[in-house]
Image (cartoon, rainbow, N blue to C red; front, side, top):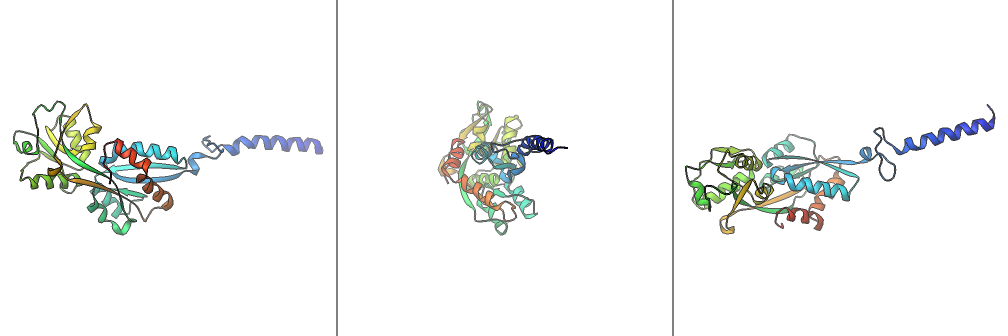
Length: 260
């Protein structure tokens, strides 16, 4: 082969390689031509069930602002999340619905920061057919009331405020997380349940929320912390910091959460 023909062949091969360098194996490209899915940092966030809706929005907002990060959420009762951490489940960030749960794994986390607060309401069927107006009404034995289990933060808060008012409630079921309580009311399997204000708001049009006066209520605090076992410590710390930033707080407050 002549030098001229060899040069032409080399140039053709180089031209064919250019688009392959800009694409990943799955053909995905980012603005710079790098494989977006392969280069992204992937975070796993263990979060309290009551954060399901707002963190789904927060995650999308964070990924948009940080295109190199992808977040996967695992939602459950705080007590379940703490058990997962204690068992060594791989994750990067933990967010619970109370400081007590977070404290149980303090040896596995960085320093927690409270990112938001919440309060309880009485969730009833839409239209509040049983005319429930206050906590004392939940003592009616003719009502089917559901509560979160005693080991769940929402269950602890519920019993705290009921005990403070000397109200005895015999729940028809005790659920593993606050979203399960909400679901029972939504499905008509219960007449009422104690949930967070934000949970009731997420089911607007399906349930009604009866407010509980602050003097009779409990304040739920949501601490967030990085996990020491994380393989992405810098990215995990950045997400936790973002939750306390003006942008992160706006997402939380738009969903009805209170300032920490």
